[in-house]
Length: 156
Image (cartoon, rainbow, N blue to C red; front, side, top):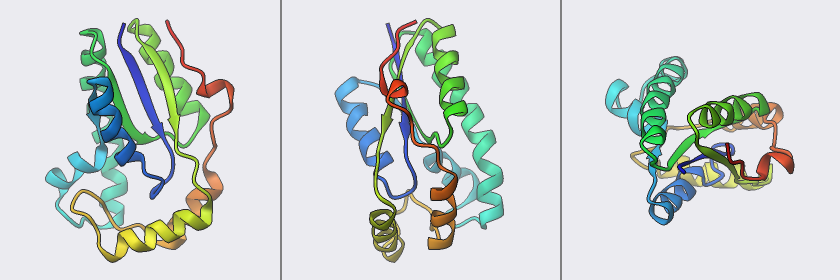
């Protein structure tokens, strides 16, 4: 049975690093939106373009993920999954395909996120976009950490 792994956390929490690690350990297909947005929209798209691109890119990624899960291939979605509603939606989608699911939460305190973000922005990697301290602080306020129950792996 294939498993859908949802990488949950804010920018700077280490989501993509963890997703890459799990990709190798689990022989999984890893889907990271920033890696698709850059070739489609350029290296430094304006924030409004970046924000507008995310939903369509993630939508196409889900189509790829669903096909992979139906072929019994593990999939890692490196989307952030900031709300319980979004996490539950994707877990239900996986279950409908006969796949299990789990949430991998990278729980990093706000001050540490700000420190990591400053370091990342100072030497921005090719596969990442600039995130302002103001944006991160606002996102920290709206982020819904997963509950203990959400962190329990599910089988269909």
